[in-house]
Length: 385
Ligand SMILES: *Cc1c(COP(=O)(O)O)cnc(C)c1O
Image (cartoon, rainbow, N blue to C red; front, side, top):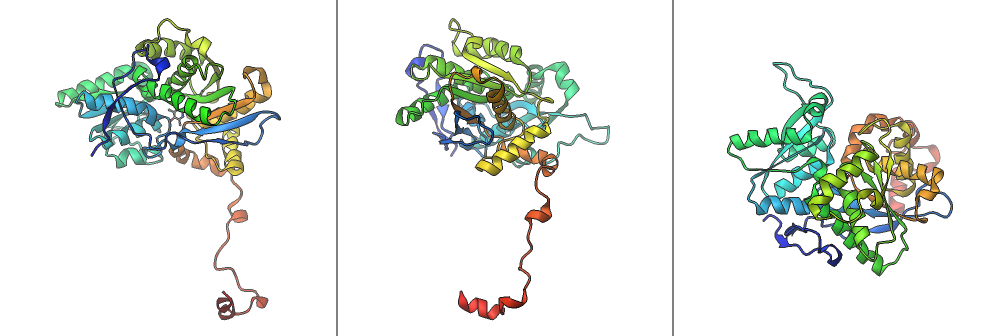
């Protein structure tokens, strides 16, 4: 049985917007835990908590699960038989959508941006099987590969339309989901995250002054910012987005023109007054600098939390830099970082990460332990157990 669809009732403070009619419960990990997080390099006096949105569910789908609760409900309600979405070759969103689609018996079609067109007449392009790709393939997703140059030329919306019309010609009825699931409908997932946070903080007031979240296609940030603005309880919290691609101007414009109007947020403050953005793309989307990977390795060893290289790792790296260099950017010193997931993206970075790990021979031991003279015989040791 696929998950059921339920009528959706928005928080009272969001009821004046244009809320979706239906939702499906996919986030089995919600409410996601909030725990104190002593990351090395935090300046004195700053307290940090982490909200584990990497634990939402749907096979490690992180923040995308909250969006898919609304997007999948809509797709199923409208009677679609397939889903088309688009992203980078290691897209967490595409992989999350493929899993969710299969939960509802829909056929996933993923348009993936590949570094270079590798095909010739005889040689079809290959996406490989690393990280998210392995899951895409296990879900028997249909992959539509597009070179970076073609992607730039056509843009994601046109590419989605091309595949949609192709599938319609084949008699299918595809449901279209934009990059990152970040349209108005998907963004309701992060209005709901704010409602969840209200309840958690009412039960355990932590005095949070700032929320920090990675931003890739804008929906998670836009929902969090609008929710915090509208919620009387969260109104004093300042929301920060760490941009892992594009720039400030792009995201303010994207949120104001592509996300908020469809949610019914038309005459309130625009995104510029609701969020503070930090540009942290570094070498570019999906490309890691050694110091960013170093932050991931340091945080893993010190706290047992794994950040992903594309989003949360860059975000924490930039957060620590801001706390050092621009402490006044934050409203106060009690900060909540939302971990958005992305674990499977780590596997693509294995060769780069390997250089940061201790030499194998310094941490690897071979069993059984070599006998030395004074340890007695095996028989004696066994009998003393
Ligand atoms: C997609 C994604 C983000 C960015 O969220 P948006 O809503 O697209 O801005 C952050 N972290 C991870 C791990 C993601 O997969």
